[in-house]
Image (cartoon, rainbow, N blue to C red; front, side):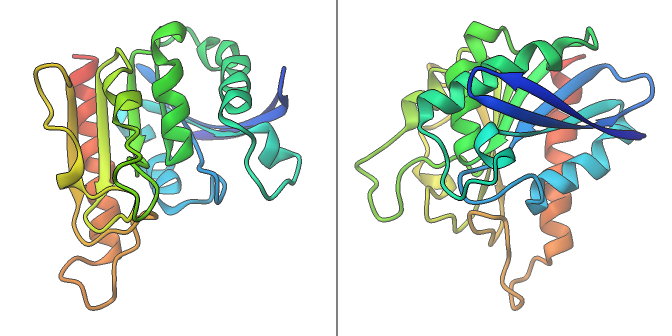
Length: 216
């Protein structure tokens, strides 16, 4: 695996891609961060460490607001604009690109996947609704992505527990994997039956296996 960082000008400002390039890669998984943090998130770092060995190049994307050092995320329209501006750089290797992200980044991937012709969508900790507000559902963003999708969700995520999601299948062609005891950041309590290492392995194994099926 080789690692390099690339700056990309977008209509929303300068963005940044940190490439974790797999030798003989068969696809690119592009994943962005949420509204409350950056690419140092444990799930993003775990994917970048584990997947290149499986022939998957991982591109960790930092949105312009984050590169600029701002503490508050841009509006959804601006996030989408930044992601669209990054897309040509993500497709430059000439490989299929799966659009992904965690939390707000997952929403961006869902909203833009069809128009950008993404090979699939990876939604990590999809914010199905604001905490305590299940009536404010964002399920249509996920089910309307128009591409094969995988949702990886913590079992105790206040933004939407796995059982709150629409049943996959039929009109909702996506898969859902639960990370037992995980919160919105996939942190697990020290007293949980699942260790933090096991939780991260659940994520990397599920994503790796799903991507393998996607490109089979």
